[in-house]
Image (cartoon, rainbow, N blue to C red):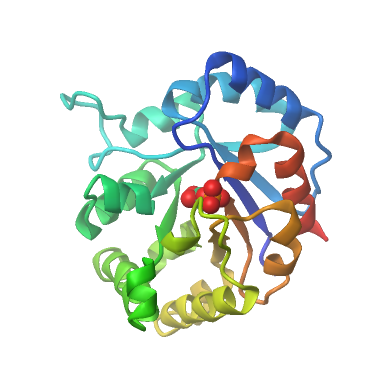
Length: 251
Ligand code: 13P
């Protein structure tokens, strides 16, 4: 049985004051025991959130790491080893905003995935198609290729210590959510691709859905057999809404 995971990606949002308010709001949420909860603040606020939520059982992750795990001369980057030292447990890799707006390639995504694991962090690998790709009938091909590049470089066993998130780009921040059936189809394909190499790894890995998840649609999405929780953007900036999404994963 896979333990659901609900993760909040705060993206490039927050000030010290608004983060303090969000921590306070999250502290007041009743979080279901059977659900793992994680938040990904901006790098600047990671320590503040670690301090604020240390005793709440919420894991903290970073939104990115450098391709090399060790510290070094690389201005502006943060190493996975530094994130681990700060207390992070997870790191997002391959978010579509980084792939599409910052030109991050599959090769870089794979190196970041490996860097995270080499420091004991769990990589949360994001995959997903654009609207143009979906309309061209290429969804499974695009998602399959993003996943394959990591499997081929690092081997299937790398997914024994990782999480995958399917985030259709057209559903991110748009208010358009993939229907539970649309999402399930892609989640099942992701799991089948992993199962082709290891049924055990495929059965254990959590595949999250991301893209306009809200309290109102979470239960329906999380009810699908291959959807093991959510990667939540905008709605994770509201503690009550995020708490309700976490509770939906526990029901
Ligand atoms: P929204 O929930 O705002 O659509 O963002 C999803 C996302 O990109 C999470 O990583």
